[in-house]
Length: 216
Image (tube, rainbow, N blue to C red; front, side):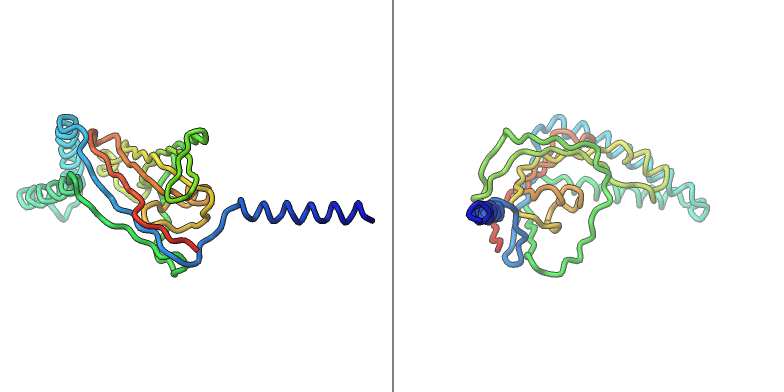
């Protein structure tokens, strides 16, 4: 009888320890990221942006001209394309700052992405503490899902690969994040620091730095 009671007490103790060291799902609080974009190599950035803009321009032109309704509208189409290409360049603005915020426990209207995850690398030996949370490094690559895109757009965007280097914690378990919308990633990790690059625009990076987190 004593042996049974002793085993029971140990089991309770192990259960309490598992809860203490395990994850939790926040129901209150908020998390705020600050995005900082940076041109790390002006030469590489200018060269790759020039190539990317030309590819984008060609794919748009083919797409517009393949539409019978656009017959005999080449000059107007070229003006529209030039405007769209110029807007594309504004995406890559050096030293711009943007705030991303999410309140835990709120009804989330943000749909999950349809990105195609190509590769995930974990480095659990590479660790750091962010705002009191033990984190390790995870790098993953993805492409946008372009099943609904036409062939001309795919000629431009089909080979773009995004890479995110992240510091993640397993202490927080939530499927909602102000920056990352990939469900398969959030089911495993909760990112607290993100560095994003892409293979089509070199010498440019987007860094999402944790500004505030109050999770309860």
